[in-house]
Image 1 (spheres, rainbow, N blue to C red):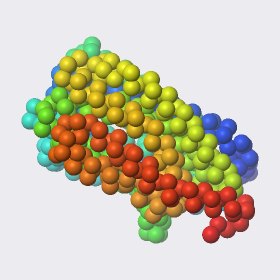
Image 2 (cartoon, helix red, strand yellow):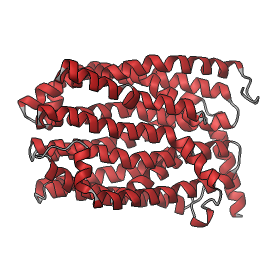
Image 3 (cartoon, rainbow, N blue to C red):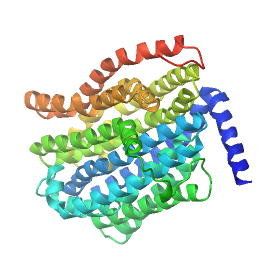
Image 4 (cartoon, rainbow, N blue to C red):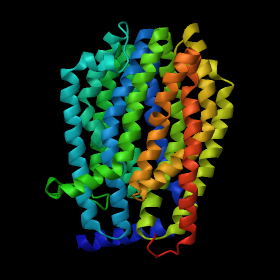
Length: 460
């Protein structure tokens, strides 16, 4: 009876993913993902807001620890995107057993990786936060905040896996429930522990750790309650090292993207701290604001990922191509509107988080520059997600390295030395423009190949 029910659910999901108009399907999957990302970023911004009330140095600590969170998420996204892409293609090919095996393997691996980060990070806490770009005055706040983030690392990493498997199965609404619940609780926790009980930075750390734990258990419950096609169990953990390697290879672009984001944050903080705590705090606030807006485009792109992976596995190439162009146009429209609106209120946005004239002056220039960069991001997002979702790992890895690594790192090092603080403020914009033009020659020929290959045929 259970097997019949599972097969019926599989058939229903297959029809949904391969027959629903792609624009409608991407919106259905993208809206919950976008909401999840917005809420996640709202609670990150809430941390920034409440911690900023303590002082400029405390505000800088949030930016420093943001690099640590990127490291933890790098492992979570590697296992999550890697397994999710494989699972979605296996479900498109109607292979339920191997989908469950990859789900279980990625989940256990992410728990182990998170635990390793916890142990290593707590043993070397002070050198770690210094490496992340902390100044002497920021250091005490950064150490306190980072300790709680490290304790939550296993749950943070594995939540990324559970979230991505749900998305790739086409069940983004379930993922949204887990992430938004944790996000809302974190905002409430910040208010209670910092504003009411005056716990300071410890309150922000406790609130973030507890919210991550709650999100983890909500997401896990979706699997334990049979809401998914793939199933989790320790006995399904693969005995084939090649399958673990395949997960890592497929998810490596995400690992690179997040890892380079962490390294870039370290370098950004190191270059900014030459100009004092105000510069570190300003760039931290700008990055949080921009990532909040960027998450809209990213959420739509993540709605496209399961559509691309599932239909590529089912050899329905026209749907993959149609989904790409719909996502690109929607991303340009939404981020374009945000850029136009945001560029006129840069001082107000920065001042909301830290009412410090020096922070506002530095942050306003950087935020205006990054608003312009938003127009160049949708193509890079769509192309990277398409190649990763369909298993083109080499191209996806290269493209994922551009924005936060291959371009941003040399750009900020060169411009900070030739143009000073202004060079730091515009570095991300320059990197985004370069990444846009580099992506074009990869995306255009492949989209042409999708158009020319008949559905059902083996793509060359």
